[in-house]
Length: 243
Length: 233
Image (cartoon, rainbow over all chains, first blue to last red; front, side, top):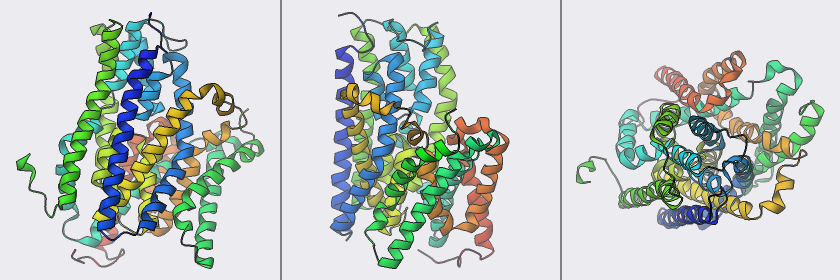
């Protein structure tokens, strides 16, 4: 059978790796849940953590699927399926594929038909993003003990240090909301959506306090996020986006 | 592996987690590389060396650096199990890290403790399972799903996933620590307004924000503005 970006064998290769990733996730889930019980974390908390993380992941997962569709126009479905199920994101895979195709004198404006161009793209995409995984495999223990000594024996400083790390990440993404504000009203759409999401989260917080709805704490983030995504549709229409 | 026993107070669970994490992670790494190898073998189409190296040179310096920085930024938040799993399954900033942070916050446990580690691992594993299943089902049902996913009506919702996520996450963590948050926030807002082109490099700016936040936190802590120093743990 001649090469095609959607060749059945490619589905088989990708399917094997995806099944492996799934097995790995299940293994870690079972292991961590067992340890959680030993540590006295209640079954209800474990269940809520699983459910809320699962609920939270649906919308981003669907957006990853949209990324698979984008890439599939150039390099077929099976390989992007694999790449976006493991390390990597559309923001990395697309430039990597474009660079590899360019080096082979091809373009990613149409479906790749040459097996050698495809294999070059496949190798570059796979190799280009491995550093994080390799470093974790080789040195996670050392990095963690380094972090422990950085925090020292001062427990309060250790807590502040992790909070500062969270805030560093959050501030970068909050800053990103302002990237397009100089483009006029449509440039404020991301900011408006973020404010709506923050407002929904604050409402959840108030409801939890007022009615003692502790169960809501696990679901506040997914609910606020989905609510803000839904509201982004009228917000975009109102603020003149999409023109 | 005997020489790595310098780590203090490592529980039996932690030790077995490191062993399992390395085994699963190494196998995943091997599989990720076996796929392009199998493609090259099956179709008898190996990449020509010169273009291959040229493309690799275009990708490696930037993405290998980002990958290394991500490890140092995210490992303290994800914990042992979460790191081994998160760095295999990817999508850290838009999925795994927020899932872990949200779960630890809701369960009332802290990153860096064994309880935090366990809750973070449960969150990341659940998130990975759902994500993998959604993508797999989506790939096989694409014929039905494509018109919905690509509909212009839904486009704003997908365009605004990150604002929707970081708005909700931001309000919780910023309101908990406004003193630490102010400086990195102002810096990032000013930076992105001055240079909108940096949007594609946001992952490089995460550790920059973290360094600013840590510097501010250290300064405030030393001056006694963030609780009393020296509570020994």
